[in-house]
Image (tube, rainbow, N blue to C red; front, side, top):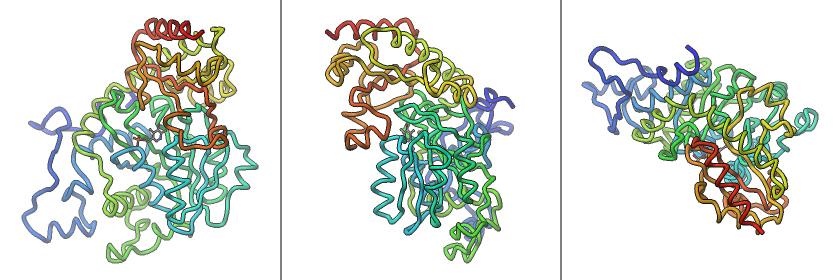
Length: 422
Ligand SMILES: *Cc1c(COP(=O)(O)O)cnc(C)c1O
């Protein structure tokens, strides 16, 4: 099936007389006739639903759809994008381990690595998003367990050289994790370029309507976890009577363990209602993404031609240092987010934003409605100036998330707001 068809059809095939639309199974629990039948589920001898913290039919359908869209062997929904990263990293890392992460990742992800994982004993080395292959290779240590980047960084819009990242990771027998929230599988599928694990905040374009918080972890199913570095997957798990994930589940070992171990023990499960709403968003993702990209390019070109605008960053602009890389990896476009700075710095940025009428100031990005945000005073306000610069954020940066309204109305709004700056 083509990706448009997968958005509509994948994950759920009803039988005679069953609901045509994925139903919301709003039940925490599932009935069995014997304790033995249920015991077999607990021992992972049979597959089936027994408690919604582990699995739920609504979530199951949406997980299968997203796995299909990304080209993975399985997926696990989570309560948020943050929970997806937490679950994916702790699935293979524990105290004493080391990870490498791009310094330009989303602020929440940065905090998770710099603070919470550190407190848990997982040490992180940050590298620039446009790190050279040599520098990246030199960042690996004996105890490095994964390499993490965003395909298009939020909000600095740096486009990672995923093939090079994958090559470095694999040269050190380590998997590449890619947060693919901004391009979505419509514009870019990291597994096809060598990524092993793909993550999303589904709260963004996948939902697309800013109604349901969520996240997802997708397993590419190609990484060899039996290389001696991942005892959590390749050695007996006593909580399942000594079962070994790589033996029992083969190329789905990672995603199975994420569910049966991490989701079982930590519990950041998505609600069935949110999964249902996410599925509605996924059905139109292939219609919305091209419109976001088309509108964003027009907004970026308008801004670039305006005297009061100091700089514009949009990876599909000819002037972008990432233009060639975008043509290679994402020829149909990246995302709807444009960032820019106006002359007059932080003050002028604040004045411009306060003058916008159609574009709202919200702590969100990547949905149908045009919105904007000032990262230095909101999502990234915990960062020092040095950290801000490393993350590719200037104090005057406006992150402008272009929606799918008529682009003439969006540009007219920006135009009048720019004119309000004196
Ligand atoms: C928003 C976002 C997250 C965090 O997702 P939540 O759903 O808000 O928890 C992670 N990564 C990226 C790239 C994001 O944009």
